[in-house]
Amino acid sequence: MRYGENSHQQAAFYIEEEVKEASVATAQQVQGKALSYNNIADTDAALECVKAFSEPACVIVKHANPCGVAVSTSVLDAYDRAYKTDPTSAFGGIIAFNRELDAQTAQAIISRQFVEVIMCAISV
View (cartoon, rainbow, N blue to C red):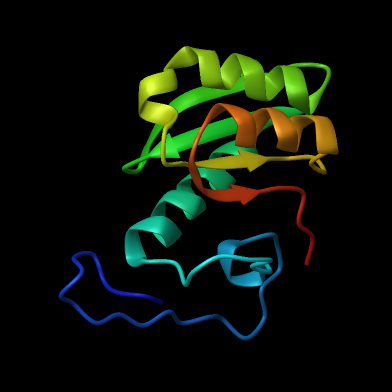
């Protein structure tokens, strides 16, 4: 972890030995810098929210608050609807999906906004 709740604070991230469901602890970081405490807390909030839906869903979280939540028949449409809820707050936020992320949706995200974390369809 890059730092604690504030940048001058140290932090630690503990993982349970037997994780039984998708979590931030079981996720694999593909690229980018180490996450901060706030990044991890927001990612956890987004993941826990998106897990509540059975249809394709997208949740955007900023500062531990959902600023966009939507379900649809596709991840692209779910993202588009979630983003349009509050585009200003979505900037620099955390985006979570409950399905695999397709190339079209990934392109829509990177052409539209800066994102700290994108999390999608993980399994234990």
